[in-house]
Structures are given as structure tokens and as C-alpha cells.
Image (cartoon, rainbow, N blue to C red; front, side, top):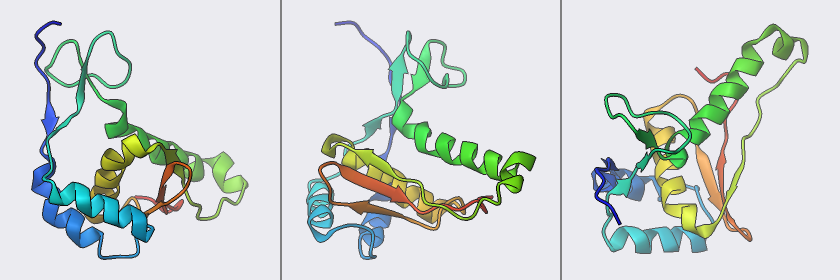
Length: 148
């Protein structure tokens, strides 16, 4: 073991937002029940940093520290899709609004849910995500080529 400074996302700051988000048609009832159980137990801060060697985006002004991939990966996928849709090639293909699906293991449900609620409430990038019961938990952002 070694000492290492880490950066955390304060999940507790989003507890009310997550509870409100769960009142909508965002998940299978069994998934919503599990998420409420998680919320009722109190939200712990989420470690969003990793030490080098690691891949991904470096944390500004933090040498040797990188953002944990689940923090930025979904937005990167959506940004790449938007860039394709906005390109001459994408326009020549006549791309229409589409869905973007992520299939995740149950261990990723907390970060997926937090990202879902934050994305749909604080950005115009997605019209919403739906977490579905499946062999793995599925986070389904319903995003279109009109992402701004």
C-alpha cells in the first residue's frame, strides 16, 4: 500500500435530484427499488481519480492523476456521435435521431444512475436515460443527432 491523494465527486449533493429523477419512468421497478435502497443508505463520495500509469484524461493541475473513465466515457461517446452527425459524411448518410445504449454490470449501477440523472437534468445533450433490468443493468441515454 502507498499513500495517494484522490479526488471525489460529492454524490450527497445530488441526493434530492436523484430521488426526483427516480419518480419518472427511468427504470424497471426492481431497479428503482434497488436505487432507492442505495439512496436511503446514504450516498458516499465517489472516487473519480486514478493514479498514473492510467489512460484517459489528465486532471488539470494534478500531475500523475487521471479522471476515472466512467466519469467521462459516456459524454465522449455522445460527442463523437454528434461530430459524425455534423460532418459532411454524416449529413450525406442522412443520419436520423438515434439511441445510445450502454450495458453495464450491476456494480456500475451507482455511477451509471448518477451520470444519467446529472446528464438529463443539467445538460441539453440528452433527453433522458432509462436504466433497464437485463442480465446486466442497462443505462440507455436517448440522445439524438441534434445534441448541442
